[in-house]
Image (tube, rainbow, N blue to C red; front, side):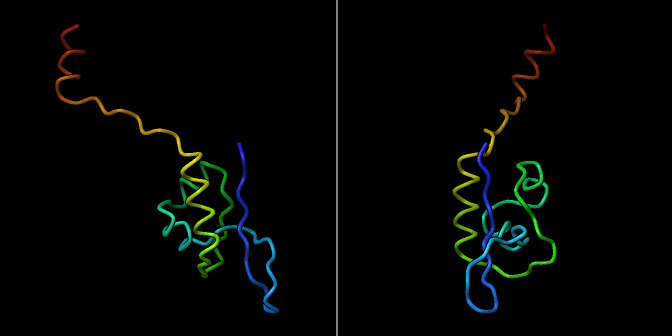
Length: 84
């Protein structure tokens, strides 16, 4: 499994590797803290900034590594299983 790293801008306007993604970046990418922890995405509770590059990196990572949703058994499926 690949990993994704957060990048932040230092006060001197240099890019460096950050400790993790902010909650706002996860929210904009369509994820939350629990999913990030489950997928082993680094999460930094102290950060409050949002960088567009990080959001794009998160979206790309999530689209490639999210497990497919589990099919929900509908009413008819439950009835069939109950009759067996």
